[in-house]
Image (cartoon, rainbow, N blue to C red; front, side):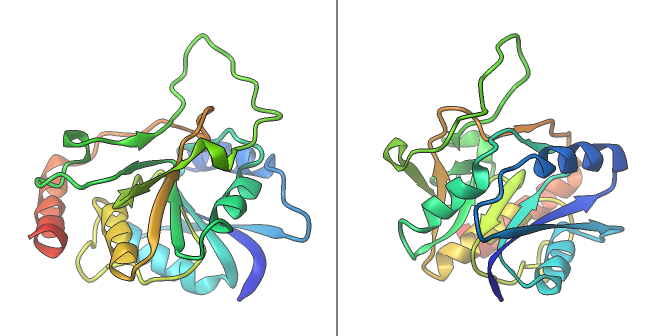
Length: 218
């Protein structure tokens, strides 16, 4: 494993969205002594199968699993995640939005969520010199939102259960917690990411919601 390498892993179904995502990634500042690569996954059958395939295809220690419509605004994000991982060897996963305590019904919107995300508006934030400060703090979560998941160690994604497009992120957070790792979200004065998001298939969502409850909350 290359201890000084980042890999951006993106499931791609919309080339225009991916092109914009990659544009923002290309403008990130790479810490001295580190390298970064892009690993798009196309024609995936599920998020978990795609992420398992990509996880095993790269030797990078630091993997950044992203939605294709997630845009990284913080130019110092890579330095910031190294700083966070360096504060505690038990931290295994970082996100930009997360859930400290899962709702009994599995629905993230029905419980407290933490973190920050950019919503387009009239204000124009100055990101060029922004860096996350450890004194701003970290939220410990049970899982983080799948728009961005950063890890510094590998655990298999549960494609044996979550073979679609929902609850793969919640599942992976719970798997890291099961192994005794911390899952954290930094308190971001300026949001690290913008995310367009989309409406999911409600039938499939409910199917995987029940599977999530049975596996982790029952």
